[in-house]
Amino acid sequence: METKKFNFYDMTSLKSYNLDKVIRYQLNLLDTLDVFTRQHSENVASITCRLCEYLHCNKGFTVYCTTCAYLHDIGKLFVPVDILQKPTKLSDEEYEIIKKHTINGYNLCMKDLKLRPYATVALNHHESLNGSGYPNGITLKDIPYEAQIVRVADQFDAIVSKRQYKSHIDISEALKIMIEDTKPIKKSSSDIHENVGKINRFIVKKLLKVVLDDVYLEIAYTENYVEELKEELSRFKQIEKYEQKMNNSKKDKDKKYYLNGIQLLLKKDETIENYKDMYEEYKEAYDVRKNMINKLYDEIKIIKKLRV
Image 1 (cartoon, one colour):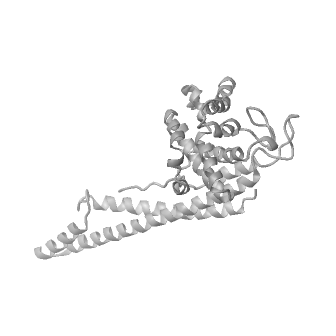
Image 2 (cartoon, helix red, strand yellow):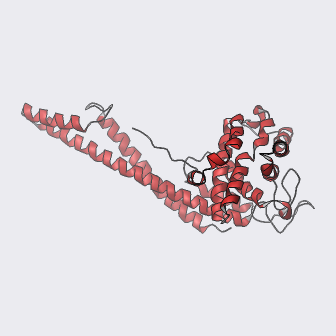
Image 3 (spheres, one colour):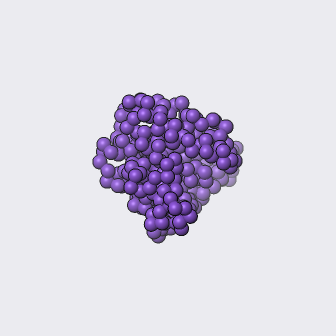
């Protein structure tokens, strides 16, 4: 049985902007990144593009922000792979090396006239509105708006990737973490501002809309698959009926008639000997997808109740 996969990040917006033509030069740089960083960069670009649409940014700024998102981690070219892909917790020394990707990315972009416009996000996408970020600990008034947008997209994808979501079930937990980071924190340093959180509250509100779109899309995608499964189950049920009638027939011509009917209904790799096993697999797949749809609708209810 063919198992259909849902694309967690819908690329519709990116395709509509023809970004592959606009930023072909910049995207070539992603080929030099490790596969995980490249995928992350593509995910962040997808989220950024859709955030910009909900933020009512004009097309030019949306394309610019999306390109910035593609290139935000370009400084990781200078991070050793054994640190970049370390499965366990980083040491303090390793974390300091990772943090330098912001400065390295900025320097790389500034040296290339084609990349220079995107240097600011490479540098500032880990800065926090309250001054608790890096590399410079700047605050709201000094963090470019494009960097604030990419910061939200970057953080969300990092949480999603870390938790290895295969579906939007329980994605509200990731959103709750994002919402928590919009809240002001107790001042633990004279450099931290108490009246704002780490990330932009208004942008996170739009992130909820982006995620809701994704959940609805996954439901629609899954419902279409369920309809296909129903058709297959109906076919198997007919095969089962024919087999019962064939086994109960006393005349050879009747047995042959039902056998021919079965053979017409069987598809590639299916036989009268194995179809029952496949029938059970389809039943299980149908039940799993129906249960998933119910859980996704429950997730929508939770997300709609979240307050930023």
